[in-house]
Image (cartoon, rainbow, N blue to C red; front, top):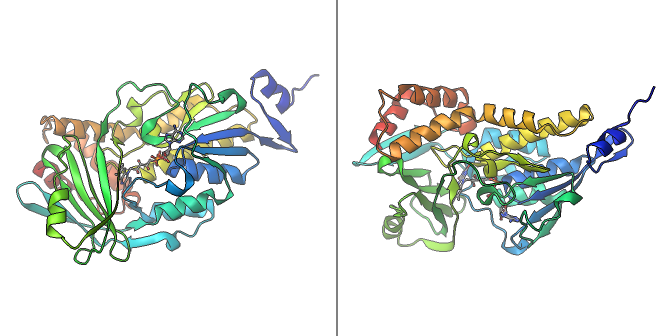
Length: 371
Ligand SMILES: Cc1cc2nc3c(=O)[nH]c(=O)nc-3n(C[C@H](O)[C@H](O)[C@H](O)COP(=O)(O)OP(=O)(O)OC[C@H]3O[C@@H](n4cnc5c(N)ncnc54)[C@H](O)[C@@H]3O)c2cc1C
């Protein structure tokens, strides 16, 4: 009886595969060295795959545009997987986040794990064992996709390789890296009326921090005021790009031919906060699980399974997105949309450690009402 080998199966499915002993050796291109691309680059390079990562920025000017704030619990988990000691990267451990609200109201959120960390160094260290080609801006039309088994679109907001999504939604944002901060040493966020954006100050180390805003109306309230209130502050750099708030449910397709999107390119950003580091890493984990299964079963990467797992994991992000859009349009009613609000609360509460701050229904209701 003829029993096909793995090589035979893959020859028939037109996948360029080389077997080394029992291991399968895939040729993978990762486009984009942000959080998703760097983590996947590190994890896949540990295996028996041939991985090349392409990043449009030149190495010396590559900078992770982000305020570098996220939950320490989750970053410890992902760092362990990649063989890094996360404690080495922490800049500031938050205790209380000050939330300024319209009409001079203020709330304080107790923090449990929200930190800022050296994201640039963390990503550099992830890439230490990865073959990276810097300064190459790739696009779907000219990139030799057929030379690879898989091309991972980790281009974040740019989504350079996947087709246009059904209903994208992004919010303009920019920030300053500032130094000589002598009088604030905690997280501060100011929510704009109608949840149309927010201002943030995230402390780093040695009197440095990120100060910026995302604002659908591009008024960026709080930035000018910050400079006026802290005249001693010096600007180190100004950076920016829009943040995608459209959740995975609206960002399909996630795959196209041998292209697979991971991270913000497929909408893995928590829409209420514009927070994308942990969600991007969670989508990497799903990708790796599905790839692992394919390797164990000696099959092709199951795009349908990947799609289903991503949609399931980020299902409630759609409810959160709806709350944000209703609020922005002045149509959110805490009575009429009670189920949406409960979905956000229950899902966040279930995952409290993943956020790094207390999830309290009364505070959440007060915040939503005050905005
Ligand atoms: C101002 C700002 C502040 C933020 N602050 C926070 C925060 O504090 N905490 C948080 O959790 N989230 C924050 N976010 C969101 C978070 O940074 C992103 O959601 C997250 O980085 C997405 O990760 P990613 O790997 O999918 O994409 P990115 O990290 O955006 O990486 C994409 C990479 O692809 C590269 N690239 C793009 N196009 C091409 C191309 N054609 N060819 C080759 N390379 C390409 C880019 O240069 C980049 O390096 C912030 C976002 C912004 C804009």
